[in-house]
Image 1 (cartoon, rainbow, N blue to C red):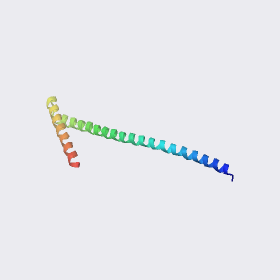
Image 2 (image 1 turned 45 degrees about the vertical axis):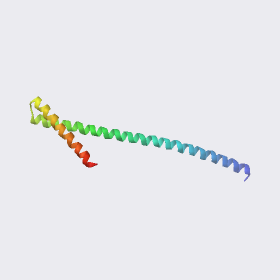
Image 3 (image 1 turned 90 degrees about the vertical axis):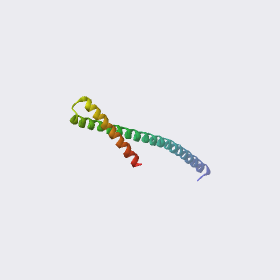
Image 4 (image 1 turned 90 degrees about the horizontal axis):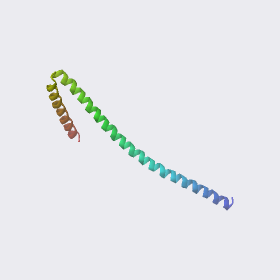
Length: 98
């Protein structure tokens, strides 16, 4: 082979390596962004699940209260008291799970 052909092949390889290096750097940046978005979405899902559980608890409390206290004023007081007890219980569970 001629020296000219070898040098031109080396230049082509160098250009391809440079291109691959740039693509790798871009993919690393993109991967970081995707990981960050994934973390944010996991937090969002966790928050949504907590809200769903809260709504389910409120619904269950409403059903219990409706069966126990037919009077609207008594029902509201009972609902508030049950909600307070549930919140305190959840705080205790959270504290104990740490």
